[in-house]
Image (cartoon, rainbow, N blue to C red; front, side, top):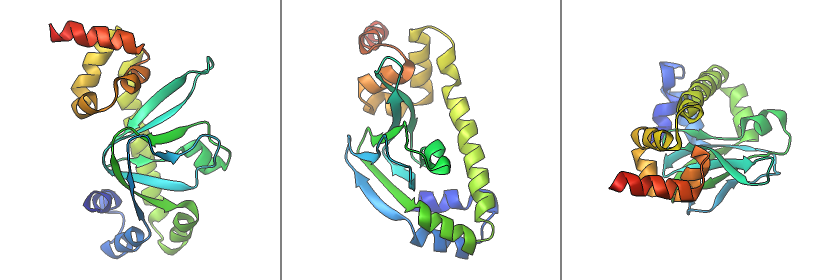
Length: 190
């Protein structure tokens, strides 16, 4: 819970008493790899925070194939923002790719806390902006270079994920086939 406390203290916006109140409303979850945090077709009604492990955020392309959009790592929030804010069924699923320890708070509770904690809206806005900028930065390398260069950049940025996340999810994220990734890994091992 120390990581969650540190993130809620982002920018010194909230006093410690407000952070304590927020933390009291988060629920702990221990997800096994493959367990779902949010299911496609449901309305996103909770905000998650990864303490340990990793989640994948995925959807389906026009060809009907599953596509990993990005990974949620420790110290990051997990939510389908579009569904959360629009209250529409989600086209995105979120599931654990590793055994994951995380916390979540229901939207109704978070909304109530927004009324009780005056600066929570400002913190939420700041965290949302920071997370969106990180997502853009995290995914920018996917638009350039060869498959091998993309994988090498993935290794540089996320060595922990490269060693622990199943190959098919990494390949999907890099927008290459698992066979191509296997070939790239073999060539790099020589």
